[in-house]
Amino acid sequence: MRPQSLDDFFGHQEHVGPGTLLRGLIDSGTCGSLLLWGPPGSGKTTLARIIARSTHSIIKELSATSAGTADVRAVFEEAKNVLSLSGKRTVMFVDEIQRFNKAQQDLFLPYVEKGWVQLIAATTENPSFKVVAALLSRCRVIVLWRIFDTDMMKILLNAINRMRDSIKQEHATLATNTKVLECIVGLSIGDARTALNLLELVLQAPSNVSVEQILNSLKTTTLSRYDRTGDDRYEMISALHKSIRGSDGSAALYWLARMLTAGEDPLYVARRLIVVASEDVGLADTHALPLATATYFACQNIGLPECRINLAHCVSYLAEAKKSIRAYEAYNRAEAEAKRTSALSVPIAVRNAPTQFMETLGYGAEYLYNPNFAHPVTNNYLPEEVKHTLQVDGPFLRTAEDYTKERTWSEERLKRWEEEVNRGEKWEGRPTNSSPQ
Image 1 (cartoon, one colour):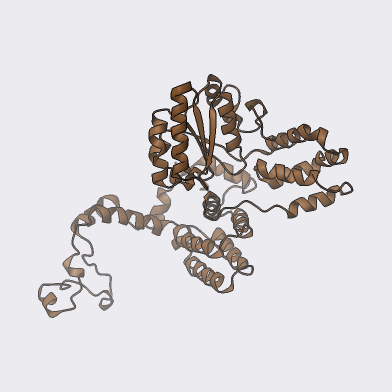
Image 2 (spheres, one colour):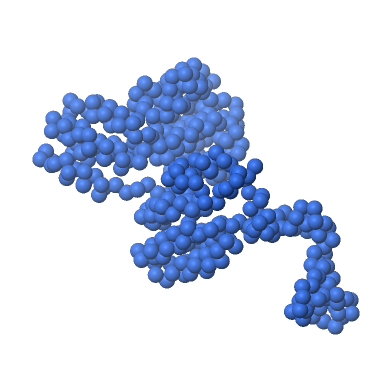
């Protein structure tokens, strides 16, 4: 079912459609080394083969899951000899290149640099983290998003048309049923390989099976795609965190459910909620951190499936809680100043004096013990240079009033929120006389 040319390649038209840069390079006969980054079933291998065929190149395929250094060197030397003898270029397709370690990836550098091979590497993980910088700079990165539903439907119909002469009429009728096709598209989640596998199940079904039976069978044979060690995990936990920060409880619970139903460790989610409780809710609601900590304890002792209720409780509370990042931003300011003035000594008045000798040196001599006074007193808590910074830039821990004044006001974005979220009602915090400038 693999397409043999770009005319039959559905999806990713922003890269290979008429008039695009990559399409023009392919049509001209050379497109340089590429790194294809996309989820499983997005067409990385198919696109590499089409490029090799379109540029009249020899293609050698390796998978980093099974190939070693010797296999890579053998392909390089063969490609170098073929180029020198016949002038024909070799496209070296390396699947899952992120599985190669740094030393193995460095092997590609001289051959790619000198043009002895055209490297097309594929990865399902973020190349910024998984591919060495030197190799990354020598490749054009092509991001292949999941295949859109409209393109997936075209892939399925094209496959059915190509097999129409070899399948029974009742199977063809079943496979082209709108409900069946829409179900396959929905379950595939942008993965063409999964979609074709599901189509194969339909075409192998007994002749007397009903549409409803097929739909139930398809739903029970598909698992949601979720990689607990890859980008899926970090993208979803980020979506959960940002949904809580934005006080969208429904969105936060959705991403929580997506992660838990896919098999995520509940303790991983609970740890992030502890961070959210201090980073985003912070001083606005001091009950948030104890609740998040208790949720972690509950997950640790109860486990799934029951602890999903504890997580839902905590996520809902954090989403609805008032938000304040005063403590979080205060620490960031203090940290920046601490790094800048790391050589300054602690003022002698606030140093501890556990020995008689240290007392004679004056440690703590000028310190005023606050509980002894009926009124506020001050001590010299900071080095003079840091005190000067606070006088110029203000305190690290700003007051709630000062923090409110520093926040951005966007009338356009507020109106959008009022229309889309608040059902057209004016925000209760909007000033009655005029909007802040």
